[in-house]
Length: 113
Image (cartoon, rainbow, N blue to C red; front, side, top):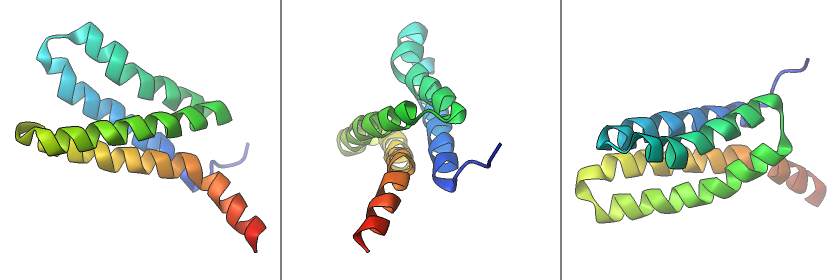
């Protein structure tokens, strides 16, 4: 079994970080089932797929990363009390997008030369 590329490890770490961030952020609000189903479960399910080596999971992690980035920007801009959570989400979403996209970008850049 070959080692995972660094981009896949970055993606896995970002997804785990997003799940932990969302659990810390939304679970204490008292809406446990909604927080787990809407915020915590998607990055965890994608993390399982990424760890199995699924290209489809990497694709969807990149797509949802765009949503998480937008959500983080909205929170960081509009809610001063939760600005730290918003910035953490922005950084983790950018890491997820970068990790999901790196393999394709690398192949495209090699082809351009």
